[in-house]
Length: 293
Ligand code: GLN
Image (tube, rainbow, N blue to C red; front, top):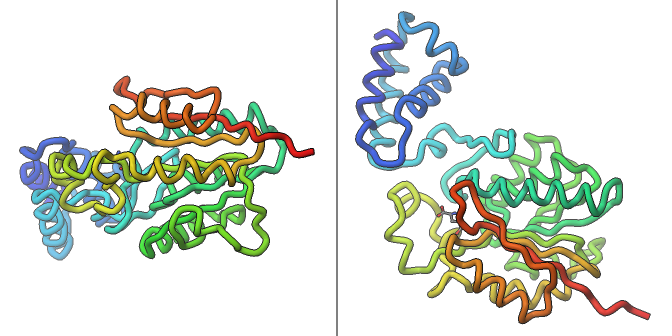
């Protein structure tokens, strides 16, 4: 079968799925199977595809038709210009999270240009936040913690892929992951997290790709979605340097509550950042420690 015909078959399979870009998705998959780039697919429409690849392509597009996320099929997702390896068991990086990373890159340049600093990321998943900061800012040593094995495995694969030697990954439950580890002085200039923040009962209202295939443990923020913030905010004060920054990704309707929680715990300079749709997506605040004598 020719590339054009096959592509059309693939597009037809998923054209009625909500939230998809059928042409792009079919092209991405076919280009991966043929080991060529996307442009090649569009410019070599009359080329013949061998039977085994035709079958494989249609089989995978059938999975996609059932809602299985494309990124788990092609095992990659672009984030901050880097190609992250992903597989089932880690949340697929979202472009909204780039808002948080871009803020951090700017903040690091303004406040800590050419100064060696430490960042802690709680709940690394594939490593989107931790590894892109480490990749773009070599003055930052990044510590990442996750409680599950798959994210640690995937983040380590990505750490190798991007050849990062300023990243250290640990297994554990939030701050327990770095507690008592030799060589880590337990104060960080920045603590970042994109914790699970969907209220438990809202998870089943999400699109199939997310609710049926992405890890629930990376989404479920308890009854009101705020469980992890409630744990992290008070504990973070012990682990931040003087004027250290705490920064979170949050749900679109959690900005006010997060602002209140941070104020209550004594954080200053609180800001809420909007995502590409104009919704609250990131909250941050600075903690001033009492200066030691
Ligand atoms: N933003 C994710 C979503 O699209 C949720 C991520 C999270 O809970 N941290 O559902």
